[in-house]
Amino acid sequence: MLCHLTWPVITKHFFMTHHSFFRTGRLTVCLGGALLCAITGSFAQTSEVEPDSEPVEVLATNTIPLDDITQRLVMQEHKPLAYAPIREADILWEKRLWRIIDVREKINQSFIAPESPLFPILVAAIMSGQLRVYSTESDRFDKPLLQDEVRAMLFNKDTIMTLEGEEMTEEKVKIVENEMNWEDIKRFRIKESWYFDANTATLKVRILGIAPLVDVRDENGDFRFEKPLFWVHYPSARPLLAHHKAIVHNDNYAANFTWEDLFETRRFASCIYKENNTLDLRIKDYKEGADMVHEAKKIETELFAKEHDLWSF
Image (tube, rainbow, N blue to C red; front, side, top):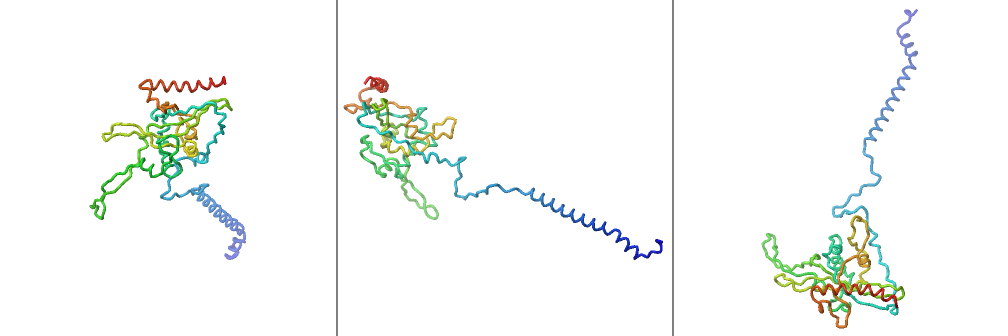
């Protein structure tokens, strides 16, 4: 019977019987293509570099990068503790002492630490008008120095020959200022007051002044004498010193130890060169050689023995 069927009838019968098969195949091809596109897109996304959680800041060419792991603001906001008020009636006994701090001693290396030396801190504050200094004609802080006077001490004027013009052949004399090298300051003077406070029955000390010392040499470079440059009134300079770090750390770089902390905790070595006396004499004016050292140690010993003696009052 099949032989009697014509070709059009056979073709129509074939497509009708397999129509569902072709529909299923088309659907499968479409789903496969969509799945392939999805997989390809996901691979394309994962192959790209994910952006950072925070945008990268592009620094300007003139911006100085931070040489640290964070901003250090604690010291900038630090304020020194105010001194407790003292009544004159409570000062049972007092002695004025003058000391010498030699920065070449090991314990005093903080004064010449390249990261934060004391002398450049004082000079920068003086030149900016933040700190007033006083003449060394006396140590009573009674004669303020002008900035021009301080500049004349700290800067030496010199003349040099320079070449100018388009062809750099024209010679011209130019005046320049050479700043004093802070490493030339080897010693400091300290003026302080030791007193027995009857209110607390304790021996206390307060620093009154600081003076950097510089060597004076002759034309041949030979040492002649040592002179102080200026006096700094320490109580007035405490807020400034409290904002500058003193390098005293051994293994803890994060230690916030200021110059004000260093002086208040007396983390320095010194020797006495003068005590208050009737004729205002220094030790070297009435002692010589090794006797000067023994006299200074004697004054130091009597000073601490005074606290025990006053307890019997």
